[in-house]
Length: 422
Image (cartoon, rainbow, N blue to C red; front, side, top):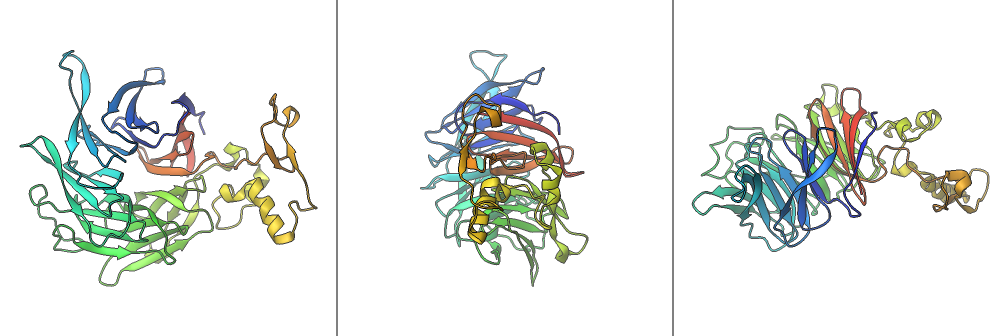
């Protein structure tokens, strides 16, 4: 793996981000009510260039349209804005980002936003048990919305568009993943029949699914063709749905921590990541019933794992490294199963000093004098995975520091990275 580029954004979490079409700019929210646009310079450095300041509360989601170059943001203030680059009236040769109001008509925080494939509308999920489908009203120069409501019973956590620009998948905290019709008569052409249905008036529920044991649906995603749906639930499962008169539902229950995001890279392969701090690959070999976990994209050795630690990974568990394989977790597991915190007996916690860490001051307490560091490239939960050009994905690591890592899907090993630390 190449050496990551590090740029300090500040001593706050990064709550949302989106890359520009050419990947030379990134819009990021630094845990506040503004989004900052960072541009990549000729030498590879990242500098703050513009600020999108219109919201009153925390920005929860950002999406950047690749064709029209428009940015949409949504916030806990129950509003959304579409930002378009226009000439600066004070400096004719400069461009500024102009906000356009969106009439969401929701009474709870907005949680997620995504442009449709044709970029003529976008969807905003919310805690109001509704999804706002927004289209542009040229007469009034603003964006208006129609709401998908029934039968949503709780906060909508994730959304994803079908390639036909009409169907929308949504995952919510009522343990359900649903497929809705978001057809707007004045915007969309009559859609062609799909495996999800033929007649698709607005708010038609084309499917409703849940995992085998239930759980909040953190992520949903259509396959590239739109004929298959996958979603990740809080019960640490990935569910793949093949719709039809008698739909085929494959639930892949894992022994790891829950996944928070997923993305498809082909019709037979998807990538998921979450609290276990490593992207993993699921695939099948031609038969829809042969879905299985292939392995981890993480290179454990790059994060400090020894070859013996990697080889000792349990079969079926992605690579061995992960949040469930830290030193602290294994100590507690031994204490629970054998009444001892070490294989040979009880050991007292020790304070690490300069002699064992190379630092001039103690850095904390661990069991048996070993640093409790996960054997993964990412040391925090991965909150987002998105497609990246040239057969890759971007994994966004949340918490106090944000790491944007680019993983290649040809050999399932990281081949480059961009790290944004704060």
